Length: 200
Image (cartoon, rainbow, N blue to C red; front, top):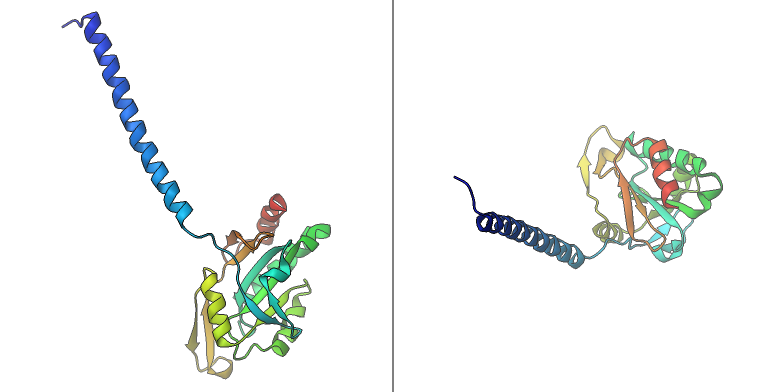
């Protein structure tokens, strides 16, 4: 069966109409997703804690600098010291640009991690890391503003009979304290350094 010229034109119009209809559906889905994303509040660092020198610090004190934030505890046997060693390597690798970045270690074990305990711990990594602690209520409130999880785990062989389970990501916040990126535990310092250099 041969199609007449009119039938061919009608088929072309039908194809164009179908394409336009599909495009409109996809566009409306995209706009809806975009609207949902805009409705979600952006993630900002928000804290008021005591540093390892006994001074109160908030995110405002680091405005204008990038913040490299890690949550952990001083009795952590492996994840925390390994990550802080990676942070130290990153800071060293930044060279002259290191002044643009402030590494911060926030304890999730305020019962043991007093400012004095942090003052003995964070300088071991020699990277200008600031240790932050507070009351259990302050740490709980701080954890709610970051995408982290932590819990106390009873363990007879651990110091004081317990250890802490926690999120092991390293977080990056921009110069306005807005969330910029994160890296899972085990990310090589070279990879973090390359990402940072592209940003700062």
